[in-house]
Amino acid sequence: MAFQPSKSKKNLFQEKGTLNMNSMMDMMTIILLFLLKSYSTEGALVTPSEQLRLPQSVQGEKPKKELSVSVASELILVNDVVVATVDDIEEDILMIEPLRRKLGEYAQQEIELQNTVGKEFTHVVNIQGDEKIPFEVLFKVMFTCSKSDFYKMRLLTIKTGA
Amino acid sequence: MAYKPSMRRKSDDVDMELDIRPVMNLMVVLIPLLIASAEWVRLGSIEINVPPSKAGAGDSGDEADNEEVEKEKKLGLSIAITDLGITIASPGAVLTSEENQDGPTIPILNDGKQDYDALKEKLIEIKKAIAGKGYKDENRAVITAAGDIEYQVIVKVMDYLQTYENDEKTEILPLFPEVNFSKII
Image (tube, rainbow over all chains, first blue to last red; front, side, top):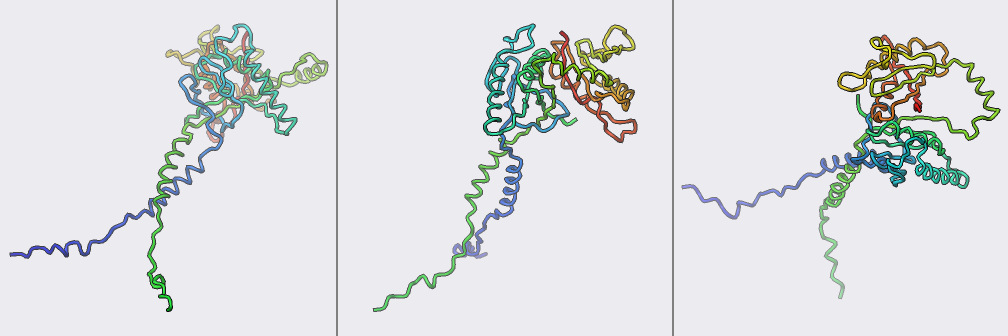
């Protein structure tokens, strides 16, 4: 008959294992550094929404943060503040009056900044248009921008690979 | 009576391991945060430069400039988009399609989409014909469209206006990358 295993010696040589975290730490550090590197401090340029889907394009450079004029399917916004609705646009007049007033304020501010602090007035405006807006609205917005001292326009698009 | 020697002197060095749990906690929080705030959509921006509007257009100083401008050779290529198709024109002539003399240069395809590839072929033909002939605006095209044409279509046309490959497919040359807009009133 076999001996009964000793109860006291059973746990005698059990090693205390520890989880080796070094490699995991390495990995995490690399991921963290990578993400920090690619993190942009400028904040998001566009707020995606149902009403503002940017058109797709293969061209275009990396956009910078500038004054933004957004043309959603129903609203026109300047720096995310609603200034007009698309219904406000008058049929036969190229100028969109509420937009011109708002842009005029911004231009005035920029000119003041240029005079007092020396910050250069770039005349750049980012236009974010919904892919479905008609050319007429787009053209009127661009016309208004160019008449309001913001004549360097950038059309924001989503870059596709092909 | 002397003090009893301190027991601490003999105490062994405790073999200490760095406690990395707080660091791990930090990373577990930071990584999802950064991933969530990363921009996954790549944005592009297309540059359009309109000359600054001048208040007094009829100045006497401008007239001298205008005369000078007129002496330069200008192509004045314009591309008109309607829901029937795309028409290529210059101040002198309108390019007609082979089938229909009155219709647009490039009629829309049967599925209702614009025929971008045909547009590009035609433009490359034009570009090759005028390249090196000293036109001042050989890189410029004016886009005009009917009022109800969608923005996406216009951006797409602009995409096709950018570059072309030469016959040997060795070089990528600019087609008509400088785009202006105008409107038929």
